[in-house]
Image (cartoon, rainbow, N blue to C red; front, side):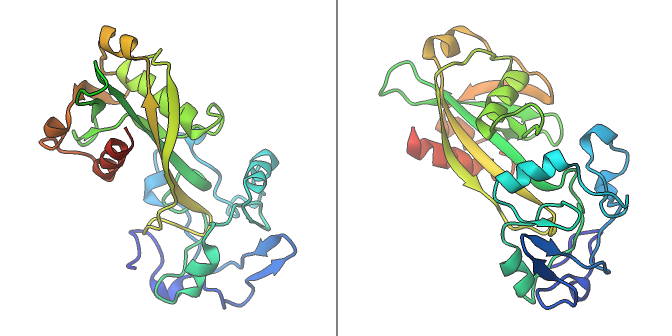
Length: 253
């Protein structure tokens, strides 16, 4: 597992046997060391409202309201109130991996959670379903509507999926029902002990009359939007893991 750009080398990562790393009751004591990532380039030139503090660089603890949320979600905290990666034991025990500490590449401590919405329509039950896709401004690839979970506004990943769909396609009143068909915590090069990615995919069974009667239009960071059948999707340049999400959705529709 090669280091991500701006992260310490494998030799300089926190390990399970590192001196000073210990559990004290319900708190993981994390020692300072060369494994700490501060001021990562991905955080530069970002506004303060989207950035969590670099703790302990600021010599302050994390806001207790956030720490309470992480604890309620079952996450372990360290002495600064930072959340600990759910797979911390396995990752720190693996000599090929280890982990940096701090917020690292990410803007937020803890789960940097995303939600993608698979909204579909079909005129009759036996018709080929059409999926709603957007073309992203950044990169120009086609993708499912979605984005990052807003910790302040969104009660759940389903809320995020619905909100992002409305913002990116202008379909504000899809209605219907939702089903979470995938939730995963992928282990990646950008992970740290204190920040990681979580992905949720939501299948949206919307009001069919509304979806056929209302024309979508691009908004937010989408430059195009449309309904596509499976053979058409196969011809598109699909963003990242969304091709797999789409296949999963077809198996559940």
